[in-house]
Length: 161
Length: 288
Image (cartoon, rainbow over all chains, first blue to last red; front, side, top):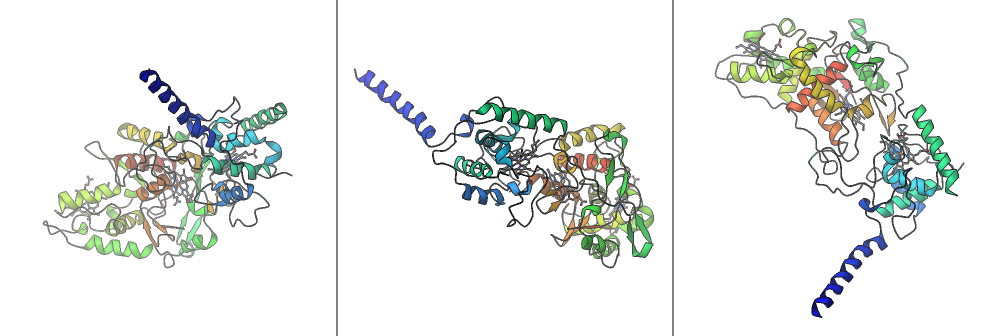
């Protein structure tokens, strides 16, 4: 009897432990990408906020998407890069699910892409501790967290022509 | 609902395959660097060395990718802020130091004779089979021939000497050996050049081979050539060694970098130098 009770309690705990983070957000290693690299389910519970996303897009310390991309409407950005394509109209070209996949791990949509994987924590060659040049320990914090991914995706989805 | 999007994605991917997102942009002009009103002319472009196997058509000096003000500074030795360090290197050259009571000049005499061509062919394999950079030769002379202390690879005294030595090859085409004893080192450097380091997973080739001429935010990407080193970097207001530049570029990929003066960086130095074989040594260049 006590044994059984202990077992159910433990099982309940395990179930809770694995269910809880899922309810709040999906961890990088648990993201389900489909065969074209898209992610069907939002990574966080709170819907993406396009205004936050617009900030993250241009912020050097977080998204820094502007290092490689340009958006005509972003007259606030002093310098915009041209390594990747212009994102004008990206909201017409891609579904939200596909944008989520591109932002989280672009290499699943564009094999070998130069675009960094924003929601990935391990599998690197000589991973560093941010920009210190010193060794980092995997799993590294992802470049963007789940909510930031959702915010950026919400922002890119507004770019329609 | 998802089907049209999938189609769009596939079409976009097909597009990406046909026109890969590689956008090397050749510089608008390849005028030479005309220094001191024509006393010295440095070519800024050369045919790519054969070992590149078509990875680049032409090789370009980093000077072509800098803004006009920075370019102008390199066209007059009085305006070039790096030249003062060449003078200081000359003082260093003549300075007696160490138990043996010698200076560099005691043995090598006139630097313009004895050091001519050294920079253009280094790094190279020494008589013991090790790959050595100019810094290694300098420190070997200091420790084993002058009985003086080795200089810090990245310190001012060493950079002044490498600037002086580099100037003696100004105008001579880079010509490092990549075969024979050098080959294993060259292979190691090549492997490093194409490795996608760090959390940003970027290789030297992503930026300097696939995207030279493009902009990373405010940075105009060059081919990452080393014929201008040591460079006077406006941002640092001082001379920058090759290994220091490599360290910075790797650190910026959120990677664990390699130490300055490491065997890895010697190998990378050789490989990167070989990509510039044919471009003239610029002595001390100016970059921002």
